[in-house]
Amino acid sequence: MMISQFPAFASFFRLRPERFRSWYRVLKQENASVAVFGQFLTGVRHLTMTGVLAVAPLVCCRGGELGREAPSLQVTNWLRGAPVDLKLAPTNRIHVILFWETYCDSCMASLPPLVDLQMKMRPDGVEIVGVSAEPPEVVRAFLTNSALGPKLNFAIACDANRKTLDSYMTAFDQSQVPRAFVVDQRGALVWCGHPLAGLEYVLQQILTGKFDLELAKKTLGVEKLQEDYFRRTATNSGAVEVRQLGRKIVSDGAGNPWLLNNFAWRILQDWRLEKRDAELAIQASKSACVATEWQRPAFLDTHALALFSGGDTTEAIRVQKQALALCTNSTLRIRLEQSLKTFEIGRTNQAVH
Image (cartoon, rainbow, N blue to C red):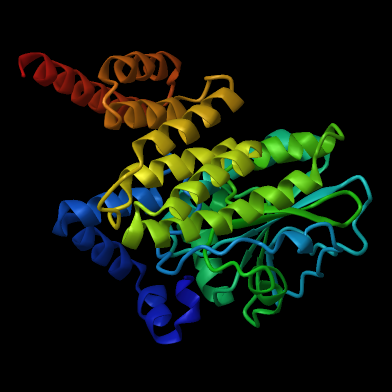
């Protein structure tokens, strides 16, 4: 849940952001389980759908709401860029309304790719609008004094009265940042999701006239099913209805490989689960890889881990090597290499026994 929903807690960290960073580092160092969970929440590696302080279950947009006219941006301060009026916007523009906050590690990880996306797609008529519910002085200080703030090349607004937050985030049952909402050329709200989970693909689909609104609604419905699955699995992983729910998520979520990759990763890493359905993780991760033509190293990494967890060490090593061959990110490459070593050690141990 967004920290801004807890005023006292928010002010403690908002005024002294280093307190949050220190607190979070302590948690990550406390024990392995918390460290894994911290990586799960904040890692760009697997493009998770939640923000860094997401302690409440993620609830998806109500699918029936997509396709309606986008709410106006009722913000109090425009700190960068000209004010954006969606009602008067040119019909050839697509707007991405990004909800973010300066305290959020996941937001910070999302901003550099969004800077690149804005530069790349502005000639096509795509405009990003960043909206924060923090006080203007907090956001203004970030824009001026942080290493990342001056690089932001899109409009930035403050929503201190929370009217825009309520008309988007609250109205769509969203509680975690970052979250992006896409408004098409007609002014219709057609998509919402994590900004690193297929946003560019959605924008390309809209620009080429291939965007499927009904599929977007269906996919968002799957997010709610996903949270239901993990709640049930934590207490009754062997129930028939739980297994059926998992298969439905893989089937209905086929339109969003990012969602399926995230689902598989959570099955394999969620610290709440005593028993993990490796077969389901293999199905979900394979579907994500197939949908992206086996070209995304992070997705291949998830699939390799699923195979390893399911006992197919030889295939896990093959897929991990394929991920390494595709990887151009030095930080991700280190992690992929570490995983490969783990798989190879596992194969050696199997041979010994």
